[in-house]
Amino acid sequence: MTAIGIDKLSFYVPQHYMALETLAERQGIDPAKFAKGIGQNKIALPAHDEDVVTMAAEAARSIVTAEDTEKIDTVLFATETGIDQSKAAGVYVHRLLDLPSNVRVVELKHACYSGTAGLQLAAGHVARKPDRKVLVIASDVSRYDVDSPAEATQGCGAVAMLVSANPRVLELDPETGCHSEDIMDFWRPNYRKTPLVDGKYSTVKYLHSLAHAWEDYVAQGGRAFNEMAQFCYHIPFTRMGAKAHAHLSKMNEAQNDVNLIEAGMVYNREVGNCYAASLYLSLISMLENTEADLTGRPVGMFSYGSGAVAEFFSAVVQPGYRDHLKKAHHGKLLEDRVPLSYDEYLAFRHAPDPVDGSEAVMAQQARGRYRLARIHEHKRHYESV
Image (cartoon, rainbow, N blue to C red; front, side, top):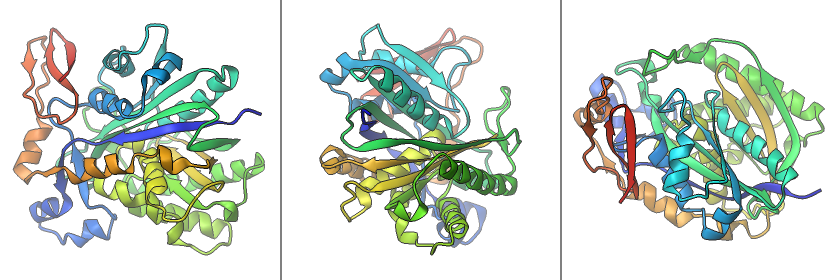
C-alpha cells in the first residue's frame, strides 16, 4: 500500500495580539483566571486588511514550491468563518498563489472539524492519484461578543498542509474512529457575526464525543493507547486539551502523563483558538517542540467540531521529518508580534464592512505579502505587496 500523508505543513498568525492580562485588567479579575483557569496567554488578532483568505495564502506560501504547483490538482479550504455564502474563499487563495487553472477548489465547513475532513478527503484523492498533491488549508477567526465569558478564548490563524504519496513528515494510518450527533453546543445563524455557545454543555459533549470516537477507532483496528508517542487534541483553550487527555487516559486505565500533550500546546497557548486550524496548530507545535526524536513513532489526534462531528485518528512520524519543519520561521512569526491595548483591540474588531455596496479602502496593516485592499460593490479585492 502506498504511504499517504502530510509532506509539508506550516502556520501563519497576524502580527497583532492582546495579552490576556490586558483583558483581565479590563474585567477587573485575577489574570490567573486565564493563565491557569483556561491555560491561555494571548489572543491573536487580524488587522482590517487581514482575513481567512490572507492568512491562508500566507500559510501556504511558505510550503508550496514551483514543483508542488505543477502537481497540486485540488485545494480544500476549511473554515467556519467564511467571507461569502457562495464563493469559496479558496478561489482567492488559488489566484494569490498563482496555481494553474486545472485545479479543483472547494470550501469545507463543519465548525472546528472541517480541517480533518479536508485531510481525510485529500488522502482518499491521493490514493486514487498518487502522482498528484492536495493543498489543505484550515483558516479561521475566532470572535465572541465583548464582555462575554468566551471572549478570552478568541484567536485566529491558518495552517496549510500538503498531502502527497510518500510523505516526508507524517504517514496517516488508514484506521479512524468517528462520532456524529445533532446537538446545539455552538452555532452561528447566518444573521449573526459572532457564535452562540453553551460552554459547559460543549465541554461535556467534547468529552462524550472523544470517548465514542476512540471506541470506534479501536473497533476499526486502531493502535493501542500506550503505542502513542504523543497526543494532539482540538484546543479551543489548552485546559480543554488537558481535560481531554485525562479523560482518554482514564478510559484506558493509563497514567495521565502531561508530557504526552505539553509540546502540542506551546503554540496554541500563544495564539488562542483558531477553530478548524486549532488541531493542526497543535500538531505543528508537537512536532517542533518535542525534544525526543519521534521517527517511526505513532501520534494520536482528536478532532472535534461542535454540532457535532468528531474523529480520532493516528499517523506515524517519518524519518528525517525535522528537515521539513519550519520551526525558525514559526518562532519568528510569534516573536515579532505587537501587543494591543484594550482600546486598540476594540478598534480592530470594528473593521469596515459596507453592506450597501459602497467602497471601503483598508489601510495597510498586515505584515505579510497578501492583504485585503478594499471592498467595493460587494466585491473583495486582494493584492500582493
